[in-house]
Length: 160
Image 1 (cartoon, rainbow, N blue to C red):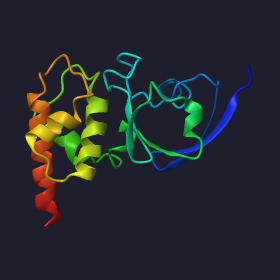
Image 2 (image 1 turned 180 degrees about the vertical axis):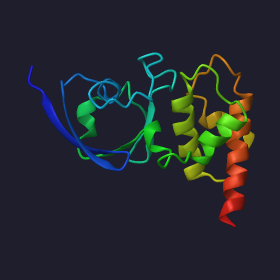
Image 3 (image 1 turned 90 degrees about the horizontal axis):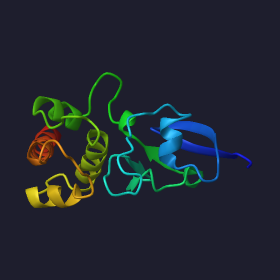
Image 4 (image 1 turned 60 degrees about the vertical axis):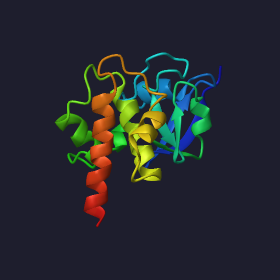
């Protein structure tokens, strides 16, 4: 089977890779591109551990063919921090212990960032609704929701 040559932008950087026509974006991220932050939790789009942003839209990279990245922009968990400076959500997750085993954390962070980019003042219900596609077996979600709400408040305050 012939490999496909894909040109895309990942985390703001022009990126090219070769893939088989049936490779998922998650396979390429974790394999040839060595971006292992996105996790495979289910392989069927049910857990959210592999969540990435595709042209500003939240998607499960396990359900996306790598070939679909052609000409598009992808943001992964690796693109959240600016060098050594963590994104406010990452910092707050650490401060509030809103993570445990780490399998769901990258997807939850990517989804939370997507929420705060669309709504800087979400309610608890809105946060829970937005993160409903991310399964966590460790924390029970309360610390995650509190971390997102606290980050939103701090980001609003910093913007003043």
